[in-house]
Image (cartoon, rainbow, N blue to C red):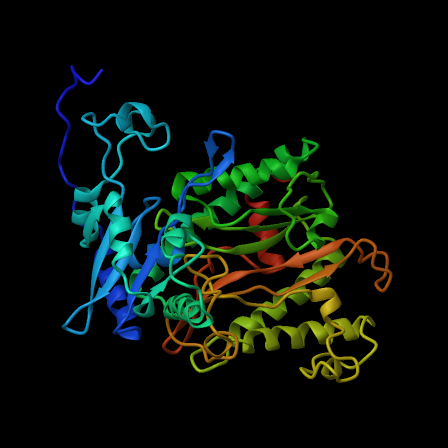
Length: 468
């Protein structure tokens, strides 16, 4: 079996374009922990069912620091005498035809899964010292617990290897600070990240257009939401790595369920279709857009009334995005529009100001939330809800900075069984979401190429096939 094969092409790929950026990011992280060794795993492959696995995606912090897509890899940053850190990336080497694993390992053997980059290839592509994975246990054993921080919960082997260190409140806090710091460093995107987000958004806009042209076909199926979901997934796989999160294709009353990911309902003329979807690019940065479209191509007067308010709220939220504004300013601006509309419609028993009070004990505070349900923004990047471990003082309560990317996505949701709203409103859900880059002098709507207002939507749909 091991003989009779043509020579292997050992050409090494050129340096990856992300390498200069990941080098800078590792140095930036090192400045926060000048005396500590830092251990950041990529994570491992997870079983889906019996002998089949979920597609692997590396941990976002690991990928941000390395650009490496390989499972089971571990980055160790060692402090050096120059005040910086030396990076060593441990990963599985090639299992070429000289190894038994090539023929016998169904998970990693290249006869089974195809060629993959090993130590030599990754060193050249990512401009980082790489070592074979079997050397990792000894490398971990040499670390001093009191001067090491580990990003835990990603790799059970790494967690077990350091479990010999007596767990203390102090060590847990130290590790938590590493996770926190990585999230906070990722809040401001560099030029490379912004370009990758632009690519993901562009692919997502194409996917939305393709879904809209499939409404007629979807309407002929009992579970047409699945057809639209599959249409978008195909675009995500063609132009990117995958979808960035479970696509929400919510038609009719399903549009009032925030995380409707079953996507198994009908697509009916006369209903609204709330599509919340994003392509995750090959670089793993994801878009996150939502549009609420009339399946038949035109909004009913009541649907338009709700859509117009959400659009106006989003306009106010986007206008509030600028350097120096707080992260919550877009939310506050959007909610002022929505609370005023709800009051005008007779749905708020208190004034908009009373409902918008941020004092939870104030009479009537938060009554509008029954119909809005969620906040207006979240950070966006490698994760759809990016930088989740950051402290409130650096994220939720902080000022926006140029380079941050956040969503602006107000919504109104009138549940089918909500007796506080008129029957004609029940079952209507509308959300509009765009991805907004904070610039030095304001903001840029990265997804401006996808129409938003009711008039634009109707003209767009009239010019495309697929209406029903």
